Length: 369
Ligand SMILES: *Cc1c(COP(=O)(O)O)cnc(C)c1O
Image (cartoon, rainbow, N blue to C red):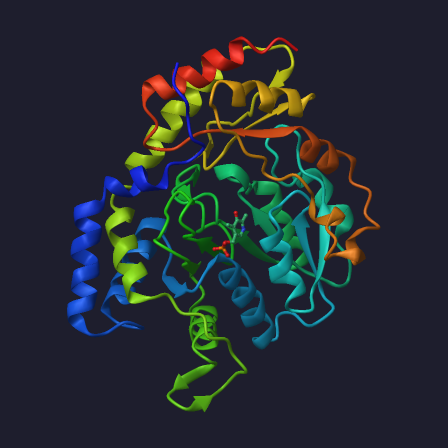
C-alpha cells in the first residue's frame, strides 16, 4: 500500500509541461498580456468544445456567475430583490454571485442520490419575484433535467448553470455549459480544467448577453474611456488563456481517467456504513470529486489517515449555517445538513496510479465501524 495525496497539482501539470512552457514563452515574447490573441483563441476553442456561440473569459468562476446575473439585470430581465432558486448544498460562490447583485437566493434541498438540486421541489418555491434558477453540476455530475427546462419555460425564468465543477460533462449529447441561458466556469487550479492561478469564463448562445458580459468585465467599457456600465475589472489573462488552450486538448482524456478511477471505487468499495455516489448514463459524470457518505465521518477519516490516504470534506458547513449569512439561518434544511455531516471526498485525479487507487480501496476494507 502507498500513501495517497488528495490532489497532486504538480503531477497534473507535468503532463502538459512542454506545451505550457512554450505557451508562456509565446505570451512573454508577444509583449501583449491582456485582451489579446490567446484569450480570443481560447474563447473560440472553448465555445467549440462546449457547443455554444460565445465564451467570454473572466478573472474567476465567481465573477463569471455574478457578471451573468448582473448582465441580466442591465438587460432588464431581473431587478434587485428578485429571487434566484439555487441548491442549498452548493459551494458558497453560487450564493455570493446572487447576493452580490442584491438578488435573493432561495435555497432548495438536493436529491440524496445525485446531490444535485431536487427538480421535484423547485416549483413550490417559485413566486412572483422569481427570475431564475441557478443549477450547479455538483461534484462533476450534470444537474439539468427536462423538468427544470419545462419550469423555466412555464414561468419565464432564466436558467443559469454553475458549471465550475463539470468541464466536459454531458447531459445526453449536449455538454454541460450549453444547457441553459448562460453558464459560469471556473479554471481554479484544482478544477478539471485548471489554470496556473485564477481564471474563469462565461458561455452563452445569447449575443446580447455575451456583449454585455464582455463590456461589464472590462470596466463597463466598449470604447476606451467610454463607460456604458459601472463595471468590474474581471479579465482573463493572456498567460492563463494560453495555458488553458494547451490543457483543453487533454481534458477529455483526463476526464476519462477520472471515470476509470471512479468506476474502480464503485465496483470495489463494499462497506455497510458507506454510501457510494450514484450517477446515471444520461449524466455523463466527470468526477471532479468522488464523494461518499459515512455516518461516523471522523473515525473514517482518521482510519484513512493512518494509511496515509488524504481526504477532504466538500463541504463541512452549508451556506445556511455560515456566519456571513445570518439571513439564511432561518432555513431548516434536514437533507442538506445531513449531507454536510456525512460527506467525505476520496482522492481522485487524472494522474493517480492504479496502485494508489488500490491502496485507497484496501485501506477502506480494513475500516471496521
Ligand atoms: C470553484 C467553484 C466556483 C468558483 O470558482 P472560483 O474560480 O474559485 O471563483 C463556483 N461554484 C462552484 C460550484 C465551484 O466549485
